[in-house]
Image (tube, rainbow over all chains, first blue to last red; front, side):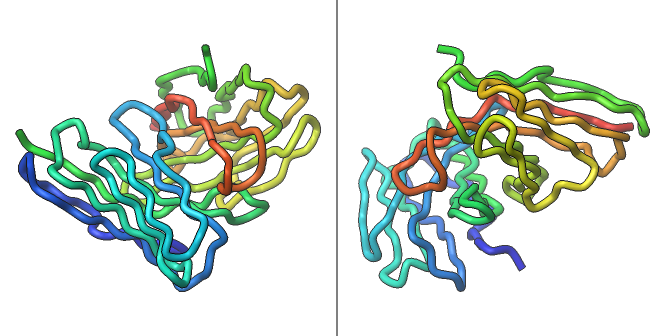
Length: 110
Length: 115
């Protein structure tokens, strides 16, 4: 069983649609990060959430940290083809290095 | 700015061969790490270092060695390549530990195929 479970694994939608992806665990975390990875590149940090219930917005992306700090969600409004990529959540583990979820692969079709 | 630089970008090895993946960062970061990425598995930590001369094992260290003789460089050595080591390898660095208030920078990846 993975420490972080991301769902869905794959998501294919049309431009303009809204979507939500989830990152869940049975463990409590002091903070959680979301990354986006484009083909042929390394992950790039989008946001870090720290406080239970915290909501952060990054343009059309809304990130929420669960009240109990066990889960998080990423909501994208009016998705665009440029949002296509692999979305990864990650938490501190093992000497405070990162443990990643399996990722959600998003494709936004024009 | 170079950031985190990995070489080579692509490599094909025969089973049993050894090789070294190079990683260098120019941000004077103390913390460096190596991850491998397989389909559907996200990234898994292989080895990490919290400073020059200090290394430790991550989640999947078997078959790999690391050393950290300088702050800038953190090479990953495959001792005797196996097909199970076919993967994409990412080097990362950061100024501090963990995720809170910290930005971790990744290299562009090294694609390794073992035949």
